[in-house]
Image (cartoon, rainbow, N blue to C red):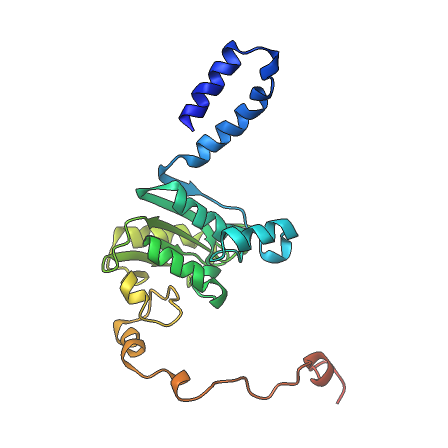
Length: 241
C-alpha cells in the first residue's frame, strides 16, 4: 500500500488529464491505509443492530465474513477490532452484556477467549445510563491470551439507579476485597459448559462442572407440558370465571 500511495502521489503531481481517475482512487487508498494499520489500543462504543434490523446484503456479509459474531453489529465490530489491534494491543468496548451468557453467542465467546484475555469487565445495572434502560457491560481485552492469569470483574447489578453506580464502582476500584469485585481466569471460565462469563461463581461450584457427570449424558431434558398458545388457552385474572 505505501508503494501504491507513492506512485499515486507522483501521478497526481506530475500527471496530465489522462490520469484523472487517480483522483478518484486517492480517497479509497487512504481508507485502505487506515484499515490496514494496527493499533496499540482500539476503544469504541460500537453500533448495535441485531439480524432482524439488517438488510439482506449486510446479513449475508456477516454470515460470510464474521460467522462467529454475526448475531449483532456490535459483536462483529469487536471481532474486527481484534484484527485492528497489534499483537500486544488492547481492545476496549461498551456493549450489551448478552454476549456473556446467550447460547447464540457461544462462537463469539470462543473467539474472544481464544484470541484474547478479558483483562477487566464491569457488569452494569440496567439503569446505569439515564434515561436509557439497557443491559450494558464495559470491558477491556488484552491480545495476550494467558489462560491462568486472573481477570478483574466488578458486578454492579445489585445497585439500582444511575446515582449509585459510580459510587459503588469507586468502592470496588479502591478495595480489592470489595464484595462485588471478583477475580477469575480464562481457564476457570472455560470449566463451565458453553463458557458463559459467570465470573462470580465460587470455585467449589465451578469444580462441580469439571468433575461431575453432566445430566445430558444420563437423559435428554425437555420442556414439560405447555399449551402452545397461552393467549388462547389460559384465562387471565381479569377474565370472568
